[in-house]
Image (cartoon, rainbow, N blue to C red; front, side, top):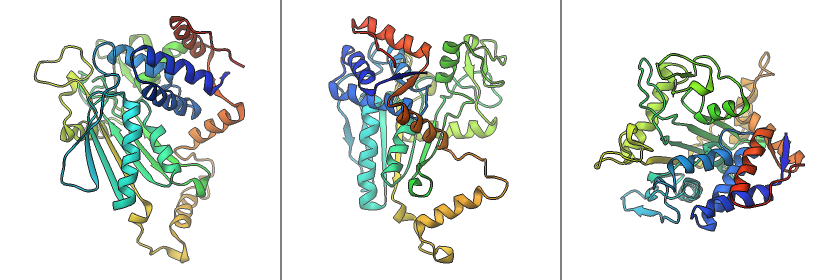
Length: 354
């Protein structure tokens, strides 16, 4: 793997976003969330994915509006806010939404921010890990840019990959936050793009071709399948229904350049922060407090016979440790080549790895 400094990475990513009309603050938010993904070993939601999404659905065709301003929609609930992001860059919106939800949770024990008219925020795990490091239980879901997942038992893609991301403040117990983060498809479309880039195959029953037949060839993927059959389908449906309550429109119109005149083509976000104190009964066994009780539960789950089991977030923590030891971001040869293609297009010096 090639080691690239965070500074060189951010300079390129920020330049790429500013060349598309985004403000310096938005470009920095985008770069920082790309760093968070790469730092934690997430290669499907790095800078290449972020810029690719903007190329396909974003600033070039109105799916994302550089410099857009967030509007807070009036409602009657003190612990909840609803925002109209006006298609502002998703990373910039999500960072602010989580910060606001944390403020609300500090005041009310729980804070919720729902956002309509959104553009992709990249990797949900990055946001919940950061919130968990700050001591909070964090959750987010969103609808995906495109309907590219087939419902259980069907043939036509009408769902997004629709990720869920949970973060738990377990750093004192484990050394890292537990992060449960997944797309509700068997794999994310970013994974398909990565495997195509690396010349590798998909796992079985992850995708179908244009005829609806299962395929492991990333070059033939026309749609994805939900993981766990009906269970993944149900979890994906949660995102669609949450978005429907917020204001999200029909899934088949999302990300399309020409929806019908009376439908929307934007996504919706949902953010929730819980202060751990707001959940505590104080009735912990054997004189334990809340933190020691959480640790005891984890140790019990990983008891005799389960010592080699992984906890969600462990791989991300190990990847972050490797990045720390390397002193930079780790990219494959193929990824570095694509980053330097971007540099050439911007008339910037090539990124040098070490």
